[in-house]
Length: 214
Image 1 (cartoon, rainbow, N blue to C red):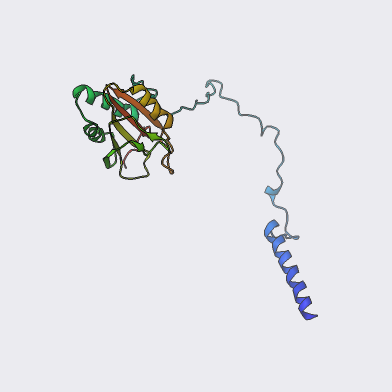
Image 2: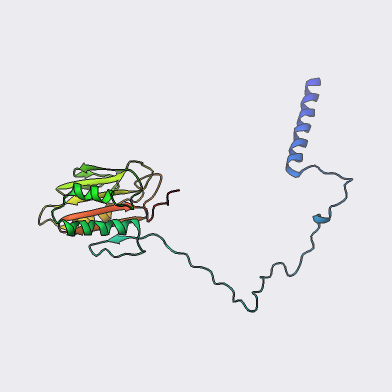
């Protein structure tokens, strides 16, 4: 009997505590606060009028900062982004040295002042390559990748050399069709750049801009 009585008292205490947590304590003797009653002002929901001499500001349109450069023309969509600068560097280096190798090109691009991270290059073979999902990239005779040593930066690039007489346009389309800007799970590249000069193809996925160093 006593045990049942204690259980009942405990249940009542828990219920009272829950009510107090949800609604707050009620003081029946307290006078109502002045701020508790707010009279509705009929002008509250009306938009404020613009000053007579100052025209109302128009909303600023949002700007898409993503830029994509594809093909041999190097058309710039949104200014001097990382991709457009490095693509231009690719063409300049190729014009200055027509016999430049894929390895030399990758090393030179990583030396560009715009690159703000320690990078490394590595020779690659036909097959599965970082940035292309499960697609196998074939059709090149030599390939070199260049990328940051820190994996959290959405940046990966390649320089491919194709055999003389190879279908450069078809190879570039293969890269475009299988490029995955979210190959890096944590971050996403903002640009995909595909360029060619003679039998050499430049591919890059990267951020549009690097954050300024503090």
